[in-house]
Amino acid sequence: MSKISIGIVGLPNVGKSTLFNALLGRQVADASNYPFCTIDPNIGVVEVPDPKLSVLAKISQSQNIIPAAIEFVDIAGLVKGASQGEGLGNKFLTNIRQCQAICHLVRDFQDENIIKEGSLSPQSDFDLICAELIIKDLETIDKYISANQKRPLDPPRLALAQKLKQELEKGILASKISLTSEESLLIRDFFLLTQKPFFIVVNVNEDTYKQLEKSNIKIEDWDTLPICAKLESDLNQFSPAEKLDYLKSLGVNQSGLERLIAKAYQTLNLQSFYTTGPKETRAWTIFQGDTAPIAASAIHTDIQRGFIVAEIVSYPDFVTHFGWLPAKEAGLLRQEGKDYIMKPDDIVEFRFNV
Image 1 (spheres, rainbow, N blue to C red):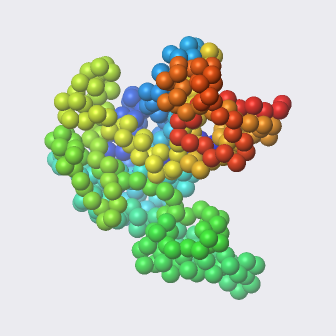
Image 2: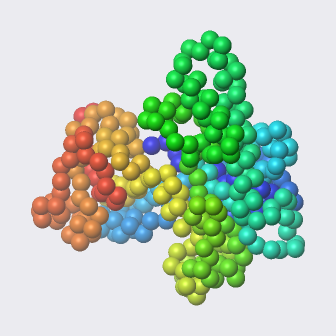
Image 3: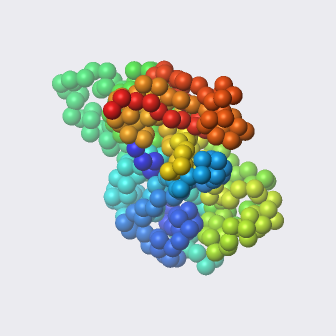
């Protein structure tokens, strides 16, 4: 599949650049304490933590390990009126459009040393950003209606545009508008910002983070993911063992960044499959529900075109029997055809015509 790109969106000084730097494990974005310290979007690629890779590589005696990756985009802070050019304006709404999903970062910490530019509460942060995205989507829809209502070349698409306009004007995100199966296909042509999948991260202070299980910060009906961006950034100074010990002292098994990446996978309905051998062990990312030929295309489109069969062993069977040959001898290697729906953590070898 094409690269996975997540845009980190929020008001100025809610911690976007701090979170971005924590994700990358190094100082890339300017995290200064003033509004719009990020002007051009910072882009970084983050490896997806996956302990299965080292297990598979050990069994296969692989020379290299290649994890899956996600691209994160640190988008400059939006303010009220951004859709009309306020702050840094429409440029960053365009940056959002180029991402596959949105990570809404909202602020729930007090720090008199950090300017609270427009941020009042997690709910108000989220509402303000959504309002700006809706206004931009309305602009897109209005342009389409204006250009097509006198002599509509596509009546179903025009009818959908009029329906979307009515709902968006009520403050309803496009992703929450009830659509028919035909409308669900037609809406893709509008490239609406509020149609994009999203999840909400709440930037909390360290004390709240230490009570992670109690940090149930609700925003309307949406689940949220509490993360202390500053703490996550500080953890990058620790060794892996020190980091694990500190997280355990907080009563947490995974870092916030691991949970964030897992949330991104869940939001986009992604899953991994693996190829493994002496040369390399590698994780590949596909959508849930993808067939074997589509999974093959993640490696190379030639494999998809020449697809014959997928030889598959489940991860538990591969590990238990310690490799391809013992799993095959135990009758656990399956040959699957073009209609096979890939399962999470399948270990695969594709047979194909060149």
